Length: 105
Image (cartoon, rainbow, N blue to C red; front, side):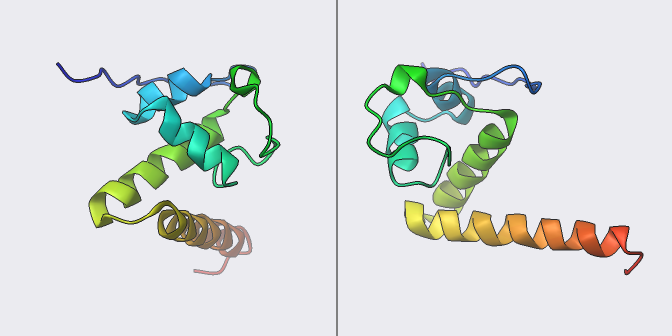
């Protein structure tokens, strides 16, 4: 039987554990740990921090993790390529918001 996917909306005061983030992305907790340790997820975590129980993920981390999963699965991309694609996508969205706020179409 497959894993159930956690579907939730987080508020700023709430945070997910490694296990909850993994469940929300339908991946193993080791997937999350590997991406934190390589700096792809959770920028605030120390790469050498062994206490993964203390790691907490925000709604922004959840969105990023889901995008990473999607790119890795859809394009059979490794984690570095997926991170680059997600970074560029996030930058494009940020720049479009700035242009929109400035009244440029």
